[in-house]
Length: 256
Image (cartoon, rainbow, N blue to C red; front, side):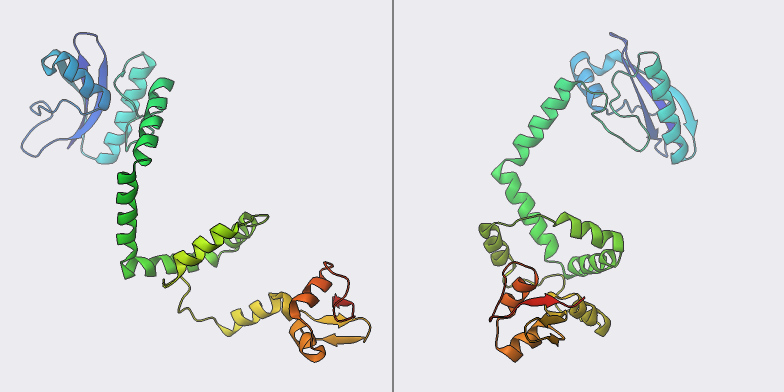
């Protein structure tokens, strides 16, 4: 059994709307519970609980009905300028700062920022995260979810776009390298299918057919051309992309 209640401050008239699952050995009328909202708690500490009264507004057998009724009563009370102690909209929770003043919101932000900047909190978070990732089951779940996500075209496109124009500093590259040394990455041990290998080969820059203009020779790949003429693969790539004019005395082009 669930019930919706209204707690009223008999001194200033402010009230709080809430819901509660009635204990098995009590009825809504005999249950002495007096609410637990943040503002309500502060008010009870200030005025004393003896200056508050409780009214039962509705009784229902189901949780989902209680969620709906709580939201309805809060909305009705607010329409009349009441439910001053309620922060959220009721039901299964909500944005508890939505109805708070800008001063309260700013204070909340400053508290969170101050807490998160503490070395002690940072160390606790770091240790808890490390502990989670020591669990092989967690690693396996992440590997599977990542694989499933990357099979979706829209996810791959978002990943591709997110890296366009992104530049990584040398310091960041070193940090990433050091952080990954000796660790199992999500892709370690994954076996690629022959189809995937072929796609990688075809999409590879060095796997594209190229033309040596002066000799009129077409090579199946840049690597093949470099080996035949004893040239550097990277230089042929730069030549094909127009970054340099020639390499080894030859002009190079991709075959379309």
